[in-house]
Image (cartoon, rainbow, N blue to C red):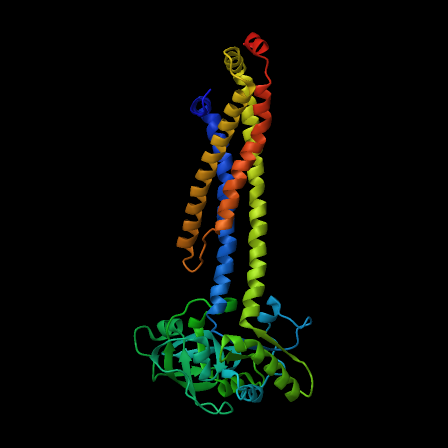
Length: 403
């Protein structure tokens, strides 16, 4: 038999039993779709986290209060809310380092905002004018916090876009007075909408005030963080070392802070989420093995049902290799159609995720797509070997007698 005849034989055999063929294709398609959708979720989470941390600013060094137990970075350190040893004076000392472009002290808490007859709870961030440069925020109305002595704060505030919309609607907010906790402040600026930020903090719902005002409101002299922007990417490590040395000197030789870089944060989360994506892909790939076993069972049933046909082909001179190739071609055909169908379903599933969550970049990684398709085809062929060999070894006389 020619190759074209072998393929035609496999096609006709698959078409002769539509229900059986459809179930085999569906099983393979579900396996591939599961890999594509789940890796889209995993890789989408990785991309989302990377994008969010990148939005913090460029060439960023972050000083956290408290010493990490390992001296390194862990995700737990990134969300800790225990202020300890950092002060405004520490931030001012770091601003004098030669490789530093900007330094922004940061303290945070929650309070109630009362304005225009409306009341709601908000996150209050106490910082300085340099915070805008480090975070690369855009101003929609007015201006950001004025440059001033960090130990003194003018009674002014900058509000996020969502707060402005909820309290002032379409009215201009700049120049309006608000009551924030026990303080009476004047709005000098409104930020452009930025969406969800790192750690679940929506910057559209934050009120920014001078750091001295925030410390007075929350009755504290410590800082939540110190954000530092290095002058260049190649100076980040230098800044990290200098910051650690300066703070150690200022804190009587105690290493009671943790200094991390933006690259370290990104590398840690990237590594964790890549491992998670690979693990999820491995779990989903188990369904491909199940689909392969189903293909094997289908092919074994096909051998039994077509015993007489195989005997006739052998009686007419078809070799065992030809019979084996025909069954292998059928297994490959089922696997290929199932894999391509699953790929299409997976892309559709990822598309639905992106429509439901526009900020979430749920795109399947190329390696996962290739791995899913190759695994599907390999599994189908691997589990098709035994039925194909069984068909090739049938004795033509006995096969015709069974019929």
